Length: 280
Ligand SMILES: Cc1ncc(C[n+]2csc(CCOP(=O)(O)OP(=O)(O)O)c2C)c(N)n1
Ligand SMILES: [Mg+2]
Image (cartoon, rainbow, N blue to C red):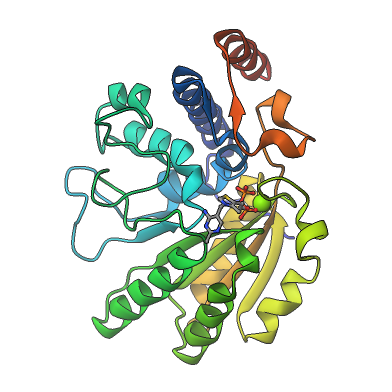
C-alpha cells in the first residue's frame, strides 16, 4: 500500500491522539472492572483518523444537517468510540467513568438514543451494515456531499446480513459509503479462521463489485491513502480491509483469544498506561 506524504496530515499528532484514546479506553473499562478491550483497541487508529482528520462533524450540533456519519457496526467497541466523542466535546469526559453503569449515557454497546454523536444504535452484529447503507442512500438522494463511514468486524462479516447489504450498496452505486473491516482475525472466543474462514475477504467484496483496498489498519499514512482513494470512487462503495491486532496497545490481551472481554484491575490499568507512555 502506498503511503501519502501530505503536508496537512500530522502523523505524529494523530499517533499521540491514538495513545490518549487508548489510555481513556483502558480507564473506562478498568473503572467498570471488565469490558470489550480487544475490539475497542483494534479500531483506535481508524477512529482517530476519521474523527480528527476526515469527518465533517460538529460536537456543538451532533445532528447537524449534511454531516458525515459513522456507524460502528461492531457496537461492542463502544468504549473507544466514546473516548473519541468525549475528547471531541460531544459530552463531558466525566461521563467516561460511568461506562455501562446504572443510568449511564454510555452503555457497553453504541446507542444513538443515549449518546450524543452516535449516529446509529449497534450491538446486534450485521445490522449496522444495513443501517449505514440506508443512511448513505439517503445522503445520495438528498444530493449531499457527505460520506457514511462504516466499521465492521471480521467475525461480524460472517453474518448473512452483511452480504445482503453488500449487494444492495453496489446496485445502488453508493460511492459515498466507505467501509472498514477490522480484520483482527479473532472473534468472541476464537480465531475467525476456525469458525468461518475470512482469508478471502478481499475477493468476496470484489465479487460484490465494491472498490477494495487492503492496508495496515494501525498506520495513519495508509489509512489516509486508502480513504483518499475511496472518496475518489464515485460509482461503487468502498471497502478498506484493515489488518489489525486485537487488543493493540493493551499487552495482556494481545495474542490471546480471551481478549474479547477482559477484567482490568487498577494495577493492570496503571501498567498499561505506563507502557503506552513509555512508547514515546
Ligand atoms: C447477531 C449477533 N450475534 C452474536 C453476537 C455476540 N457477539 C458479540 S461480539 C461477537 C464477536 C464479533 O467478532 P468480530 O466482529 O470479529 O469483532 P471483534 O471481537 O474482533 O471486535 C459476538 C459473536 C452479537 N452481538 N450479535
Ligand atoms: Mg474480529
